[in-house]
Image (cartoon, rainbow, N blue to C red):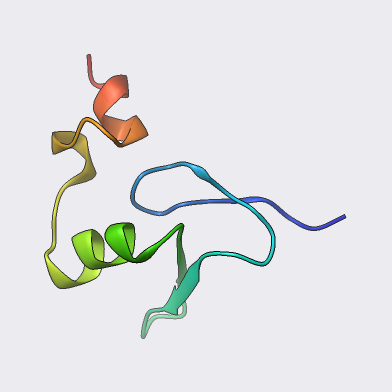
Length: 61
């Protein structure tokens, strides 16, 4: 059975065969559901707790 991963930025489920993987220099693997999450995390350095469309935003309230 294929593994269903969580997006490293927004926390949504990533269906098998989709998404973007990024390996950091320390060996940690970050998986993103799409380019919106990848760019927000890596390129722009955003905090997921500040965006309503992420699951981290709903957990702080």
